[in-house]
Length: 249
Image 1 (tube, one colour):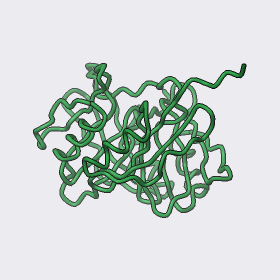
Image 2: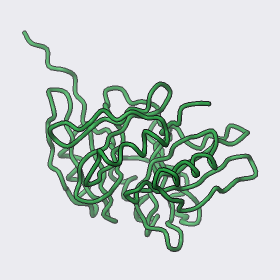
Image 3: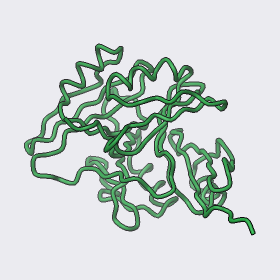
């Protein structure tokens, strides 16, 4: 059995077309279904790499951000999630090519998408580690430590505890995909981080297109800076800027 892997992020939107155009404009990404809300829209980096997807929220589904986790046995993970205090939003749903998907919720109500790859190797998702980026996704809740046991029990990941800022790494282990974090926040939410070259210039583009700065550029150390914004639907998204280390002399 392989380690459950975080393979991408997902945005279920109230208006998928507005969201796709916003992210395409701000980051220079492209979308394979930019103008068709009936189709799921994969967001692609300028080099063609698959980053995540933006789809229209289903009737009765709460719009927001989730992470996609690749697993071997979707029904087994659903059963385990329920035993650990989560519940099922929808699924499992099987496609003709063998791909199986579902969406569960953690005890705080955050959605987690599950996927078993197709038998044909259809390229549904790809989220390789980005050089210099420490983490790529984050789950915020009022009590991260209480939530940690859910993800440790569900996927076998390891929570390293909270630091003085109320943030703690959630390690997915060997072949587990992109590491993430649990952090203290005023309400449950999931967000991903996008790498950029200039935090303030990116925030300026975001605000010009209907987004809003939540956390202004913050230099964590000599090589890493972050910022956080909300998109037109109020989803929180992080920015990371990684620079070459300062060499003394």
